Length: 186
Image 1 (cartoon, rainbow, N blue to C red):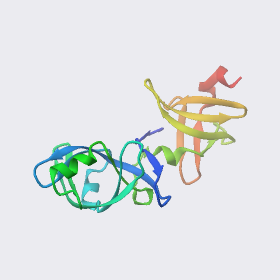
Image 2 (cartoon, rainbow, N blue to C red):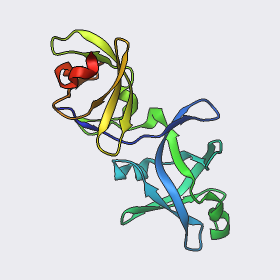
Image 3 (tube, rainbow, N blue to C red):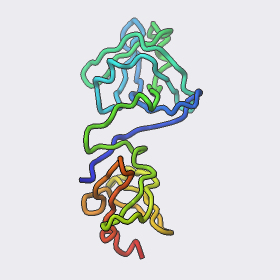
Image 4 (cartoon, helix red, strand yellow):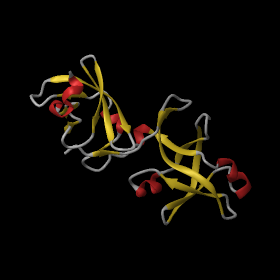
């Protein structure tokens, strides 16, 4: 089964750590400096584990912050950061991304993948022969696709069972049924 993937925004921080986004801050809530956040993670229990995070404003550099309070409220989180203990202070964080080092990323459920896990995998054909590499994962309006380099061609392979087969992260391979791609390969 081909599986699916999770959205994952990555970037390099000041310390050159690769960061992933786990939430987006919305607006202040209450009088203590709490700010509402939209979780962007598949595991809501992650909230309890967050302590040291990086906040990145649009077109800004990640800044390390300490989370001093966190709670879930329906589909949103309420977060409070050290140094931002009033609504007036917290408003400066609107629309910031809450990020953590990629080394703290939790494994996705079985059959689901992060795009960065798939980039660079060897593409194999139905006979198990290596024929190319995965360049990227693209979430297109109609279907998620793997951008693959096969020979001199760069092709978008739709992530559907008829085209993308078994993904083996241990062997670093993904099966692409080349017969599905047909004339694109000629």
